[in-house]
Image (cartoon, rainbow, N blue to C red; front, top):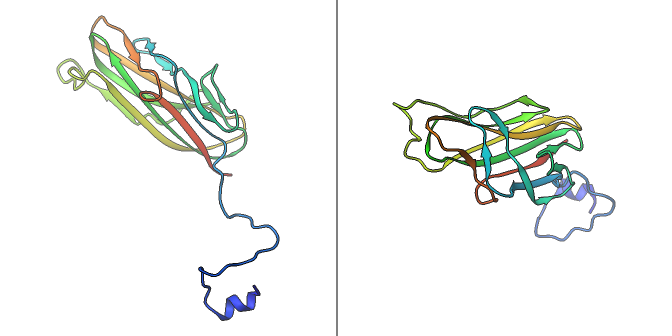
Length: 179
């Protein structure tokens, strides 16, 4: 189709068009992308940042998620989207503080979910499971890495903290948005 035809007429999208050459910029592949989960329940140390052990991959298009060190390593510079959901339980205890966060290259980033209470105001005292989620976009350089950490503190009791495994409960995923 000649460019003059497009300029002189309205473009009918129902028509068939025969393009020659290469069409670029028509879409993004959003690669690399990955989705991971916890293989089994993970005990969490009280009052400490603990890296969540995402060791099971549902998929990893570029083999960029490290299931040994539980981190995504950016293969190239660009804008990336990440999402995580961590479901925790304080067995026989009461949460006084809780959060989930991303770290990039070992440095803290967003900590959007934070609860700081006490035994007199603790909203988690009757909650068996505590879901915490986080989504963020980051501009990463090649070799930057992203990890998920959780912090749980008990106000009372002697039980342990647990992060629940399998993709039904705790998962971490991400993909590249653009260069």
